[in-house]
Image 1 (cartoon, rainbow, N blue to C red):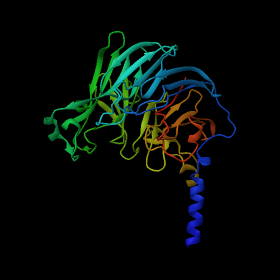
Image 2: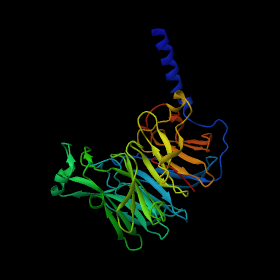
Image 3: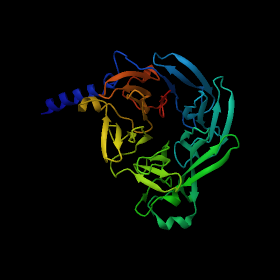
Image 4: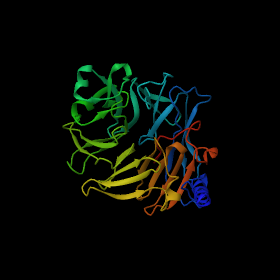
Length: 363
């Protein structure tokens, strides 16, 4: 029996080796350029500038930007200007991870075109067609609100509960033209607050001009602490849909698809999945978890960060964030392309001291 257990353990360890992380031996990439953004925590002292790169599928850098501050997330607009979420304060807030106090717009020559600063910006943002930028930020609630919630945590940052706000900013004036406060428009009666006052820990935001249920514009946010995705009607500011309990666990990067479904990187425990979920049908339409057996999919795991993007050709770009690995898979789960941020990260180790990738996007 001991011999059998030892053999099985050896097989399992071998299966979890770096050679079994999903990737392609023969690359067959589709066209497109991918934005590679190495992340750094705000309290980290950078030995050299972080280099953000727009690469083609051969790994050739087409455009690059150097940033002298810790960075979490960046995206491109239609003109290929870079919007980058960074931290210029050099301090890590004790409230929560993912807080970066500055967003900048930079042209392809790395010139700063626009800056917006808020000490409680965090995680993600969305670039609207009208040029406005939609941001996530924390805000504190007075103690009078505590009695409405089940709060079991003993330590609250600054003795407050911290909720999420969505703000839409006009870069021409830095004016907030629309906002949504989560404490006003969500049902808190059954929610249990246990995370040091960081109530929702929203880690992504996306937009659609026609939500499948209401046929009206809406935002979608992903709450890691509640393991749920919420859709917010922009006109009424009401939550018009939330994901079923236990569908996701600690998920990231919830996005709307053109077919009306949603795509989510479900971090989960021990084995992550990318899930396409149909809201009208109330079921999972497509899932990728790294393989078709326990030895294969046991390596497809990222405890935090990570993301997924449905490409125009139907393939899916997946970021396994803690390993700085990006892969492109087709509908059948075949890996067509992969990219490692660091050669030395071709191993079964977590990100630190290596950099994570919050999520990658193809353009």
